[in-house]
Image (tube, rainbow, N blue to C red; front, side, top):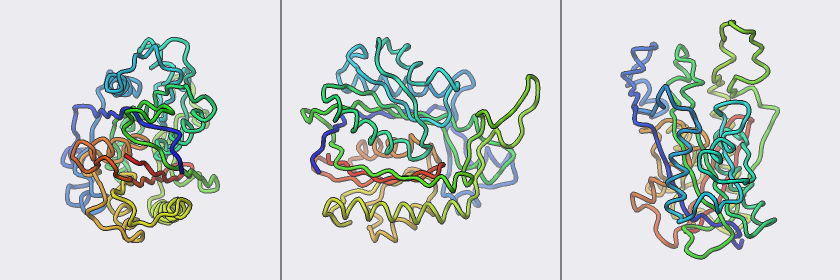
Length: 328
């Protein structure tokens, strides 16, 4: 398909504080060997006590704007994907607009959990079809360690904090990449498999302590089965829709949830290991920031060259999932 949405910058930011598996072993009954053998994670990042999701996003946003050579005042839209916003309202996007000095842009958040980057590409692509002159700052930012239950060893070892940002326009001139196609889907019947609390379903009065439903909960085995099945299926669907095979993909960048899922999806798609990019061992699951963080690192490592086609896929709470093709 002809690309109508182009990336003109892609930046990533992870906070400085590193939590190793040995650090977590001091909090819960776990150990490095167990974590590495199962999700494949060795460390993850944690934001400072004084920071929130918007602070991480601000760093990434400023880098993206600088790389794109665009002043914040020239933006028309700011879109933020997050399931860990600073507040229920105002949105992270509005907070960023104010701190960047973007003026009266259209600014809003949406939540598609770990599928957020792919959902966001679909949203931005649609907005650029409606308004080809638009200049969109798209930020994915997550402060997941603020929603981790540090007494639940099945989930607290999985997540980390990070943010990414990209600038999107309809122009192919000097673009890093074009969005060839995106497919996003969901199944709300499976909404209870992964949850992130803190909304109106958490009915706390002033001074009342929180309970488990305030934090991330996950039914791991069922989530694994759905994740592998849906990511494989939607990758096959997007390739078929574009008349492509897996051999036409130069690099596969899946959501960095855990190595077992990544390996299972790669095996079922029959893609060689040397064409799969992973960094989950260093960052854990950063939800919406996961894929663009991996993309940024793949570019920096020389794994993506001009002319490369990249296949991406993700799966997250909702349940949501998606796939996208980028041409560099």
